Length: 115
Picture 1: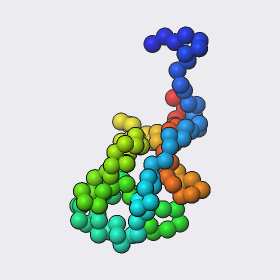
Picture 2 (picture 1 turned 60 degrees about the horizontal axis):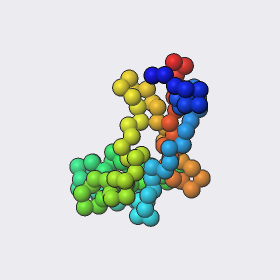
Picture 3 (picture 1 turned 30 degrees about the vertical axis):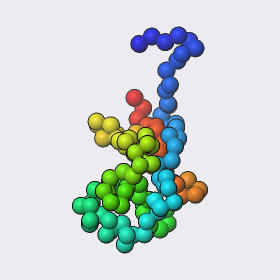
Picture 4 (picture 1 turned 90 degrees about the horizontal axis):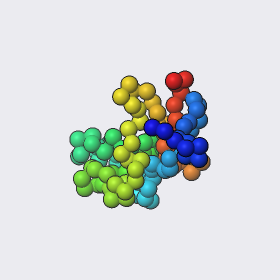
């Protein structure tokens, strides 16, 4: 595809990262203790573990799933980050999950390959 000079494609150089926003927590209730997550995971056949992140320096989890269904809660369903795959078809990591100063998890887009 051809681009005019004022419409250049967005490109990240190797090592550059773009903050795509907060993955979790999205609600006050998204911070869960480890025992609560064990029970919730057991009840929902580990379905909710797919969407959980460990809190930095704690055994607590950041959980964006609904307690009744184990699937994404309503606010998470409206967040693009919940639908992003962290790697591509070659299993190269292209989305990095990092904690900020308030211990929220942010998704960062970038790559480490020189290609």
